[in-house]
Image (cartoon, rainbow, N blue to C red; front, side):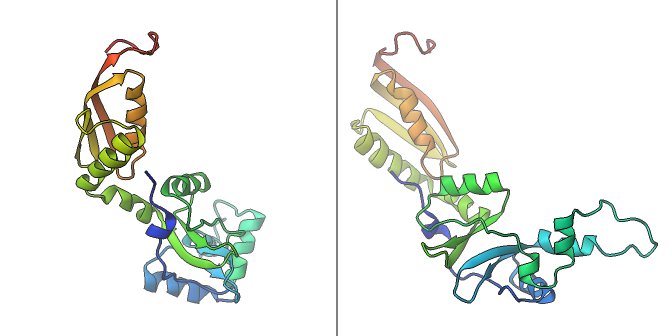
Length: 224
């Protein structure tokens, strides 16, 4: 049982700019390629930053009002520096937050959430750009066919990992929702099975109706 990796999901053809790329050319690259951010890549291939629409919008926000009204809100010093920037190296967010090809979707999604970003440049061990992964790429795991999810649960989880016979527990999958039925020997196995099923890529929810022959929990679980 393994989560899909960044290498399996990332886009390998990446729109990029150089540190000396002018402001207008960056805007053009975003518009023509229908993306909202681009990595800034040095001549040796290393990613040195990322320029997003949010970075570029600071220039628009800093434009003088035609009627002389004060700017609201006032930009902080670092925001004003970006607003006055004319090249990628002056506009970019740095150092860049990057992913590695061997990372799985769970740790990548967590990093995106913590950092509040929509995509991550993917770099090798020398920090050279090899791809880019977005929220949309990660969400593709939820497009897995129900039959593929069911097969993984039965083969890799129930049989190989837990050593259950094919007739002990049955998993039915519909629209990513897993329904577990059957009987296990120990009651303590039920939350373990449920937790493992939730960890399978593409699973949206797990519903279990499992019976047990031996209550080995010492009353730690409420009665069904």
